[in-house]
Image 1: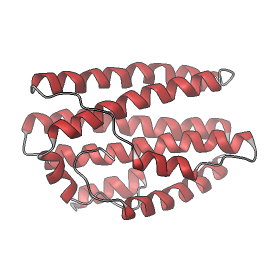
Image 2: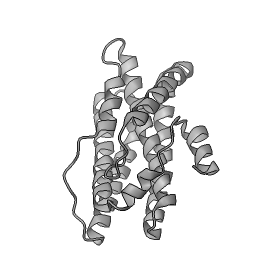
Image 3: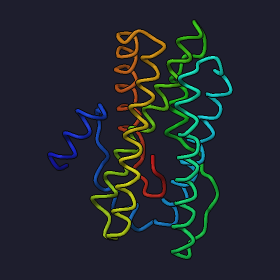
Image 4: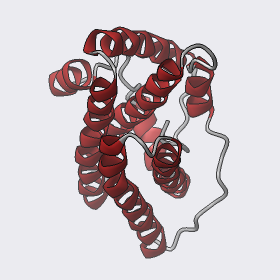
Amino acid sequence: MSDDLSHHTKNILGLQLPTDPRWVDLAGISLEAILTDHAYCEQKAATTCISLIQKYPDREKLVFELAPIVAEEWGHFRLVLNELKKRKLKLGSQRKDIYVNKLLAFQKKDGHPDDRFLDRLLTMALIEARSCERFKRLSEGLADTYLQQFYRRFMESEAGHYTLFIDLAETYMAKPVVRKRWEQWLAYESDVMNDMEIRGDRIH
């Protein structure tokens, strides 16, 4: 792991466990699969933002901040589709997202509605942070120079999304509450990553 990646991962994203470098090598030989999974990740990000807007229409800042993210994520979906087409690759079937399902299992399902709201936002922040870290890996480790630049642009976008969800959480909840729960999420996500099989056919 390079010093730059270590600094970026720990100090900016807060992630406690960096991606195993072997993942990039596996992704590089599974381009159709990784691009397919990436496309569905962007699609799900857009639909999740729509769901948050629908569930919390009274939270004005959330509505107006997430509306452009919906368009941006859907634009990313189209970019990945175009990349598949350009390379004469096919969009495959959507796979079960083990990583996201494990995160959803950590969300509070009862208690105060604010706790559930906070966990929804922090789940999105964490997914965006890990995506950003993975895109950085791809931008540095893929042999294809064009794809390196392709993923650098995604990396920069996801970093902004991660901070937006943290900011939204701190808009509606006390900052110490958000930070304490965020640390719990980071520790949990590290365990999830440590236990998961290294596979090059998916982003997470």
